[in-house]
Amino acid sequence: METVVTMAYGRRGLDVSLPAEVVPTLITKAAGTPLVDPAAAVGRALAEPVDAATLAALAAGRRSACIVVCDITRPVPNGVFLRPMIEIMLAAGIALEQITILVATGLHRPSGRDDLAEIVGDPWVLANVRVLDHDARASSELVDLGRTRTRGTPVAINRLFVDAELRIVTGLVEPHFMAGWSGGRKVIAPGIAGQETIRTFHSYRFMADPAATQCRLVGNPLHEEQLEIAAMVGEVYAVNTIIDEDRRLLFVNFGEVRASHLDAVRRAEELSKVPVEQSFSTVLTSAAGYPLDKTYYQTVKAMVTPLGILRPGGTLIVVSECSEGFGSAEYADAQRRLGSRGIDGFLAELAGKRLADIDEWQTQMQLRSQVIADVQLFTGGLDGPERAATGVEVIDDVSVALSRAVARHGDPHVAVIPEGPYLVPVIG
Image (tube, rainbow, N blue to C red; front, side):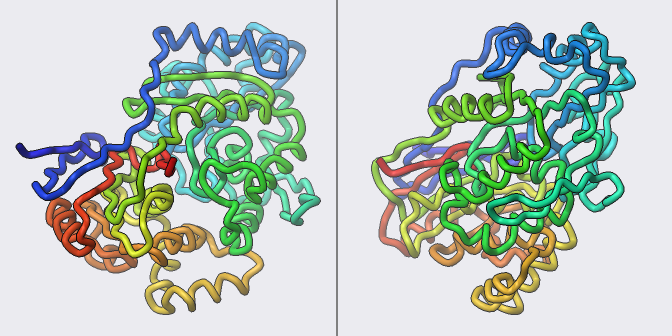
């Protein structure tokens, strides 16, 4: 009987027929229980915060507020909590015109009109509250806060956030292939940081540190810098959410940015780290579907997250729609330099820089997989030159690629990870 698995791919998914000779091991997250009443859960979170006063108490006496939300690449359920938060602020006396929603674009592309509607998720909020993109390149919109003590990272943060009397970041808490876990402090840096800040702690010395990896916070240089940067900003609070593969809300909390994030990480770790009994010569994974697989740039996360279960010399097959194509022009340039210089030459070039060129850190992360495995990509969103610039083998048929991989390795066992980087498989 034919076995078909549905991989996260774009908005609709991709059905893959597994060859008869394949013995699959399906790896999925622990089944979380969706919140029966998300609105009520948000209300409880705002009234029962982690290491902080209630939002109503925090808003009392404040004259301005800035709420930071993630950009279009993160499916945060903002529509569930933004209006309740704003209504509490209004009731506490903050004027509507003094409330700003700031989109944490980092060095990603600006948000389009449709993007903003999807990001905010609430027509009333979009119609009544000022919503702006962060611009990491606009020095006049940044505040210079000096340098971090530990590693000397120059710190510049969006002025609207720094100057606000009430500062709140929001986001998803999920495994992140460099920073350990997304959300919390990461929404500040790189989310609303200046380009020099971002390019410093995405430079070679940070990216080459083995502690800069998924599900690790202790000793992780990015996490440590992000915590210090958040402390330099001052008083910051956070809304942290966890969702399932159907984008349903599983968890939400509110509180002091560091304490509430760690509280959410503990819950996310229970859901996202999946033990498996063995390693595999062949792994089939996804780039998590829409919106994360809109670009090849974001697809790299899928190439790194499953490395803990992939045997050296194995085959990693990734499916990613790449509906918006490659990514930034800077990233495309980094990929072309990889092609012309080779792995060793490219890494040597990076090692000699103080600041990373924009987005070249993603190419450096891609090499974590390429130095140990044969990486193959199935996509419908890249043209000929873009396919060549990926630096990996682009395939036209996943089933055929699976047959070839198991034959090459003489091993029929294949790990199948439909959700991609939203979970981290571990041996044990």
